[in-house]
Length: 525
Image (cartoon, rainbow, N blue to C red; front, side, top):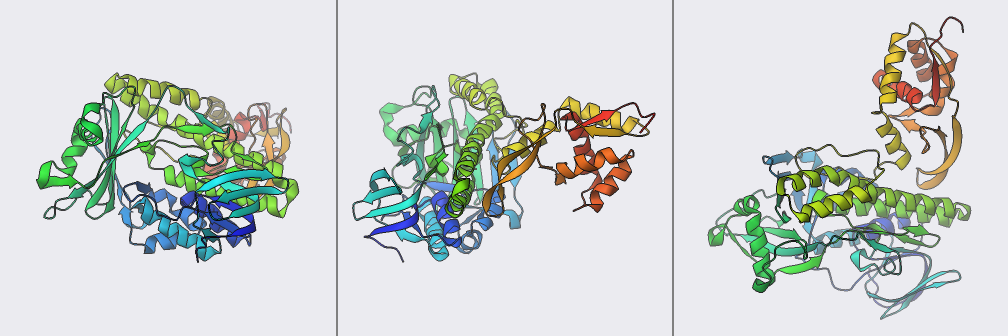
């Protein structure tokens, strides 16, 4: 049951009742911690829409929300219809059992509040927060109705950034994005087009997207740059929205024009939608969670999934610190590194799609965004493959070390190592000259623990597993035998077996990355 007035102490305070905050609160409550979830008394605006991709189902199950969402009667997310740059229309449809969800924000938050309450979190509906202060033993959060104290605070307040705005937030310079949002309702005698699909279209100086929030209603949003999009300001918000929708001609035709096709229901709203990150996402006692820490374009429809992943990981970090104070520093460092990597990876993954739009349109709207994405995502080893549509892969599902190791598989050193291995009648391996073992934080079960990773000069980030192959076991076994089939069999006898193609790929990786050295002189052993 929700409380409206209190002056209490808790283990953790979660500020913000969206998906990220509820995922964190529910996860921590299930671990037995006393959690207060502070949110506003009134539900958020129904005209704001959220979209959860099908790939988020496993994560939703992990945070305990999948069954509740399946039972809530939300519009299923069945796929995407995309018109991007000058390429043909692209249709992507999900299997029935893999569908995600579309919903207005109020309906989605209601489901997540129920999940948090059922898990044992205390829902405090007397927000907003009017004061937040660090104290010797934790934090004090004040609302109009009471004071709350806790050892840990998770800021999941989204763009409002109750704590994130206190010197943490960083906006990417040179680009600004404004969302013009309208609710479109189908004509009574005409079914809504693409009832379960996201519609996306880019045009010369902006882009538009639409998701259904009910069988007959869609949220239709134009993403513009106030400094670079040619806006019809004299026409007001509704006039600007209609003008931008006219530029997205194929999406507009899909929705239908005039009374025969549908109508605008209610006023058009404008919301800031610029990207931002943070100087730091975690320190002892404080974590920035979901959109409070960073915001990505809805270009990929992975915003909610990113927020859920952030909430899940924040709960693991806080749980680790509450149970083992000595692990607080490593756990917070791990969270900070992971959230940075998620943001930078998303920016790198968006580059090919921005390149396509910039080349097709030759407009500053796309050119400045492309330059900013290249700068923000520099150094990420796993670029996106242009697929003809901005269905950007979700970042952050794996550790940074694993992502870097996986990306290394495509390096020429690995291909050269494989060609050498397959050409030899016998092989002689030895430990690489720069092979070392380091202990670095990783998620192990429901906590952050220090895991032993193998590193080398070529792979400074280190790795422990790649394609489910245990690199420590591999580097121990490989030098003891001179035939690859024998090495493979010996490896599988010592633990969980792996498929031969994965084993061979990782064996070549180990040589290419310098974890193993291959001696080409096989005259003696």
